[in-house]
Image (cartoon, rainbow over all chains, first blue to last red; front, side, top):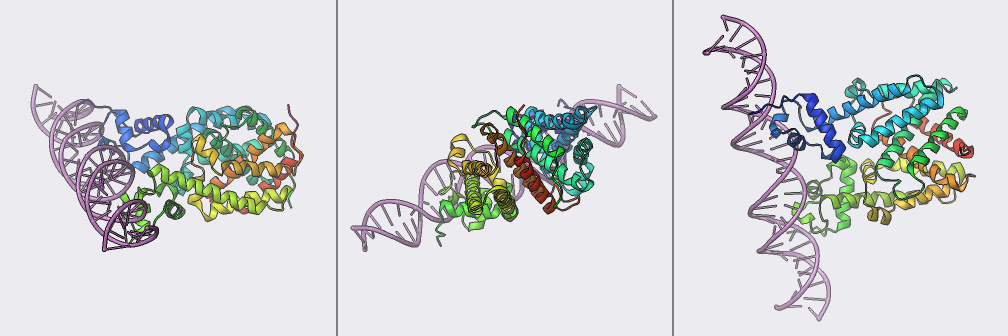
Length: 190
Length: 190
DNA sequence: GCTTGTTTCCTAATGCCTTTAGGTTGTAGC
DNA sequence: GCTACAACCTAAAGGCATTAGGAAACAAGC
């Protein structure tokens, strides 16, 4: 029997590709086994079970996005950095919708802490150094930026903007303008 | 055999309750049949298939949220209205996490247009009447508000804020402050 | 070249899920 | 009481997840 030379990494990558083509919900051991040309049971030598497979794709997506974001942020600050980060996420979601969906999957605490997740929060925090925000407001601003990016991208990729004008690109630019303005004029507490 | 007197509505409601207790992903014909005390095959008299069951729960959640939001907005304007709308969504997600997740499910165009979805967009637009935004900016602002609300609520309910301080309630309040400030000082185009 | 151990992949089997087909029995209206 | 329509049932086919145990490729040592 011809050996495929599978590893956990190759299985994960095949799962990620399948997610992008057919949706993260379609990523099952059966479907991945068909894609790599192997019997279903053979997958279980590389991956514990269906949940493990999905978690590995989540971790892959988080890491890929963090790498791209770090590269995009290099040498940028202020609004430039804000736009670069948001656009990195948005482009990733457009190029890899299944992986982006995988990245939203909930992880248990230990796994989340060991993942690239915290790197994302750190990068948003780094952007805030270009704005004059009091220390106590930083976490709030991080959460606002993360929420807005994530909310916009999921709604856009879910087709939420498909049936109204203007196009999503224009709104995206205006929303980045608005976030930049907001960070430069962050309201005082109370 | 004791008849349960099921209808599509009762099946949908049972599915919604199950979603809130066990997660929307666990809502299957089998599980719902067990919950209502009926053989699986009997469900198919009321619901076309698994996807139809899930879609009905989505529509229920969208309608419930729209009703609550409309009630909360009555007699309010400006920041008051903004806070009331956002908090209605957030409270709904906390009380009914499975239904909130169901509400994010993608619908085909015709179903989406016939759902309560457009009512949500209209309500956000109504709030903007309390702010002086140029006509061409309204859609962008609607999308910003919707994205931020949805992004924050999904991250919070997904445990994204569980392992950092301060608590999510404080961030939520600051984010509403920030959105209000932003809408009052919306940046000019270009 | 042959043996030995490890790894990769296989077949087989169990149990759960979805969906369809066709039969039975409450229940409401006449 | 009879008829007709629901509501519910059993039975069966086909798919997916998972485990157990076996065969066959590959690497290393003799």
